[in-house]
Image 1: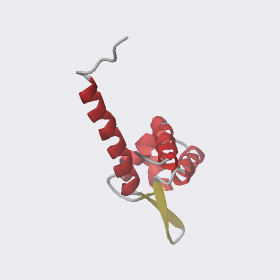
Image 2: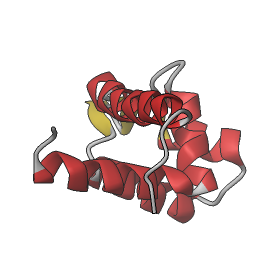
Image 3: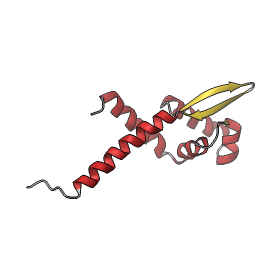
Length: 105
């Protein structure tokens, strides 16, 4: 059983990743650390839109930053994604087991 705080943070992660732009940013950051200018170029979204998406990802603790001169690089926090993947795996295991169970009326 997970704690209520973990349950709430998992819900926040699902909500944050439901947005196509934020999901695309996470997909891009899964392969390399990128700065805002790279993300603008890769996504085709405006700088303000990308910055807002990154702020939400930072607030949800999905990404962290590293200053590098005039630029700020973003990278994923893999432990957050591992936690989310574990929760989804638990749901899948429950769904598998539920295929043979029916609650009587």
